[in-house]
Image: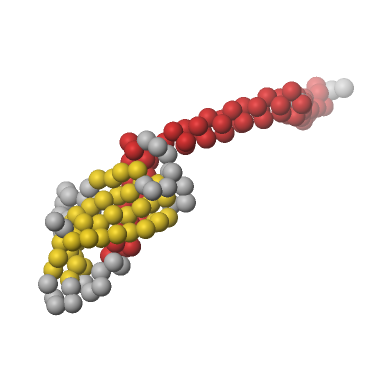
Length: 148
């Protein structure tokens, strides 16, 4: 065999052999079992972390408060029978604090910076609450009452 033919064979066969070598290792039953075990351990760890976060207000705040605040603005506004007006001015947020929600994994964001106009045209400042489910990313309920 000539040197040219040998080089061509080397260029064609060497990559095929490398691919075959790694493929056989990846597809081996031992490797697949190891991979499945590793994925199961990761899923278990993630489930454990999610369960711990569901009852930790700091964790819920860190992970979900931005989503909760964004999701809750419109439902709170829809509580107005007439007009509404937000009182928040920078740097005051619409929802200033939170607590654990009524359902495991939910949180209640709370604020006091909105005015609702009554039927006589008077403006009344209200406290409001919004229950947000962190798992489904949905608003469960909203409430408002006149500020005392």
